[in-house]
Image (cartoon, rainbow, N blue to C red; front, side):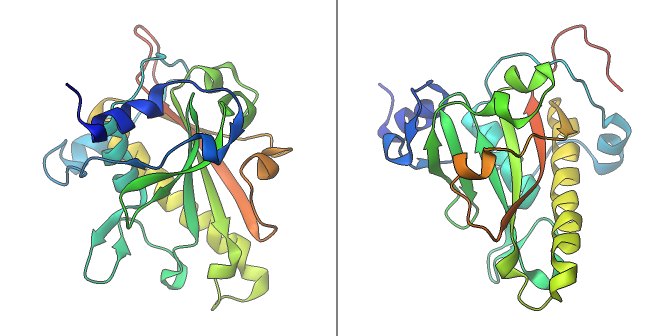
Length: 218
């Protein structure tokens, strides 16, 4: 019999009708695996992109590892992260869009916090693969956290910091034999769907999943 935790995890991959975040429950993630994997130089050698995805879902363990690699806490004593940020502002949040709904990654709690029920993956870009990849990651910067930066520099810092996270995810995907692609997105309507505040800005999106068998990688 599945444990209560496993049932909660399984809920991530069950499609639900559009609705509010109250229709979803927070999802605890398995402890990320911080050892093993492909050597760094080999991961760099194998970093590839494929724009055709298998619809196969990511397991909770893979999703936990993926998000931790991107911007998880690797130094619990001071809550510092796997990717740098300007003046340690940690202003970028990872929103995780799935068939069930959209969540925000809570690195400290190692869990997914509900944002909105319903599948918005198709709204994250105009290319066909955004509807197929099981996960769309949206990198959202809260500019208020860049308190030490000059106002004219905040969005530039946020874009750079999001780039660090994106590259971490690229390298994790190479190690785990996943594929991912960064793509431009249609921002119209997304801030409302994600319930963003005016000072929160969507920087970029990244689709992640298993490569479709037989696709050409670049």
